[in-house]
Length: 339
Ligand code: SF4
Ligand code: SF4
Image (cartoon, rainbow, N blue to C red; front, side):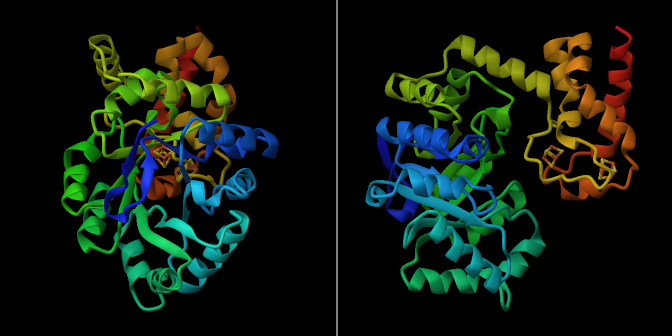
């Protein structure tokens, strides 16, 4: 494993970090095993969030006594000072630490988020006080909106930016990365596996390795998956012509309007399983009609409950036309049922 500097934070981190959403689905003992495996293989950056259920507790448990050997990053969704302070205090307790290396404002996707964070009584004031008191070393943010991310980088308030960064979502590489470099911000790549749409680690990380100062946050749920990626990073990881061809196939298959599985659109008041239903077109391409219809039956049947209220679409950071896509997929599913 190689180590590099995370922008102007001056923190030295492993060139691939651990994104801790997947450990939510593991038992505490399993999660500790996977986290420790990553640490033993040289991973030093562990990124989680206040809202990732019990992920912070699991990390706290895994690294008790090893605090000075790792770099800990977490996030708050709160926009007000009081809420952010409460989140921070709880995160510190859960992570069993008295300081965080990086604290990020989570999912800053809209102008209203920025106004609330930076305005009177906003979270920025509380977090800055905590930073002055030594509870936080560096401030960062995460976003799914290119427009907001570019704006936040330009404020000069932050030391890191975390954004979807993979061979399908190339906005980060073409515009955000150059701007972040100019400001010497550390860049953390969320969704290196394209939000779970790509399983092939060689293809996913072959692309990311072109950006040596970008730190991908890999979501791991097993020791084998940790080994798979770290083994790649220990070798001469370069995308081969076959990997490039695979990337081109994925891009052609997914197009622009693909669902990134972020689940921000949920819950639906009618109980529609929005994310799996949004993915039905891709699943059908991969599995073929009959298998896809059986596999996604529960999700696709739930689409019949949709009342077209549009609530889900207002929450989608990618502005996907969710109700229309769900209807299209339902029609497709009904065609497939007959096959
Ligand atoms: S448009 Fe349909 S799927 Fe979306 S929130 Fe409303 S009822 Fe649920
Ligand atoms: S529809 Fe939009 S909000 Fe929902 S999971 Fe997909 S990308 Fe995320």
